[in-house]
Length: 101
Image 1: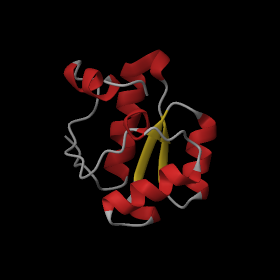
Image 2: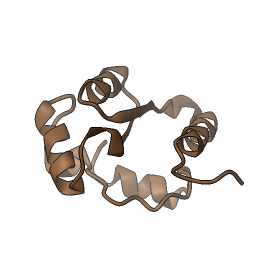
Image 3: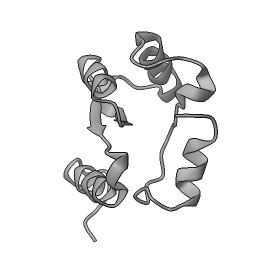
Image 4: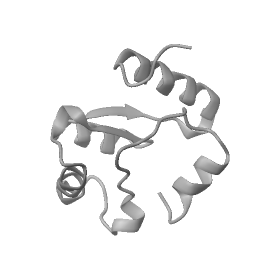
């Protein structure tokens, strides 16, 4: 992400309605994914390990790294945000994070 990107995504209302416990933005933290330090910092901030963390990214390499670190991970396709958001919503429903509408 570039600085301010997450806030812009929220303003455009293109994410499912989820109240995130913790958001770690690599552009704010100045850590580059797939650096393991990024994943370690996020675990510290969240106060949880692996399977309790959801990582959403548009890079297959970063998603694979998150999975290797033991996280849940979702590959987001920004070229088709409507489909990507629908797929992310389905993923979150399957995980029990949000309920079906």
